[in-house]
Image (cartoon, rainbow, N blue to C red; front, side, top):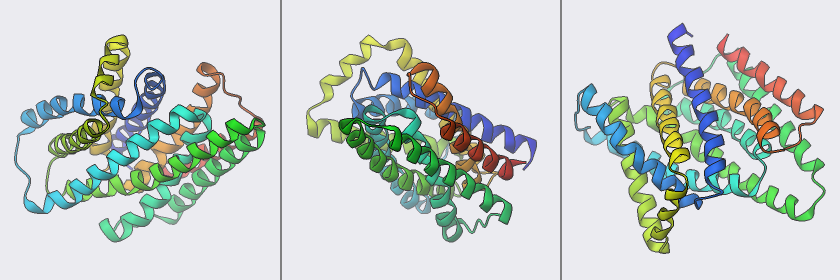
Amino acid sequence: MTSTALILVLLTSFAWVGFDVLRKLLVERIPPVTLIFLITVGQVPLFGAWALIDGWSLPPGAYWPPALIAGAMTVVASVAFVQALHIAPLSVIVPLLSLTPVFTLISAIPLLGEVPTPRQVVGVLLVVFGAWWLQRDASAAESDAEQRRRGRQGFWLMVLVAVFWSVGPVLDKVAMRHASAPVHAFWLCSAVSLGLLVLLLGRGNLAEMRKLRDVPGLFGLSLLTSAAALAFQMLAIQVVLVSVVETVKRGVGNVAALVIGARFFGESVSVAKVLAGLLMGLGVALIVL
């Protein structure tokens, strides 16, 4: 991995960490579907401006099937992710996204022809095992029945998110064979915004957008962070195996979730959680070093 590629992967990882935290704060004030719509529709002009600066061009017909499927998956996964953040501890559910490298690795082989090295496969497996260990420890420590029920709901929501967010970046890379990163990001955000708008109209929840007036600063920061995370990811997957980007992103996110969950949200951190985090860190190191 070149130094430029490594920088892009790390920027992607830390940008997503910041966005995860900001989403957890915002979902306490703005309902999940409305929040994701506002953030996504806010990204459209940002990526539109980038596309114009980069040199706008309308993608060919081969671009649209993978792009639209990726957009549909993003709609479902984004709503499920924010809902999971709302009902379960950050340190339990975010690490479940470490399942994404495995699904990404598997789907990238037939769709992109990307075959990782044996060392990278070991790294992916270490990250996934660490995430499983982390979730098991957190579930075992929870004694309240209602919290266990909410934890299980969050668990299955995050499994769905993991599957959809695994295949999504692979389809993004397929689509970007026919379009630049800013053009694809623009059309992806546009499609996701449209899908979420239809959902909001169908549920009669457009009035929920007024709650944005209560958190303008936090929302603005979330919008910029989310746009940066998506932009860095689009650039990174063009020069690095998609499974590598996903593994590093999730490994960094898992360790950060432990620290942030304990520091800012009062979530407990056991010895087992720390050991699981170290194991995931080792897996990331095997991939990028």
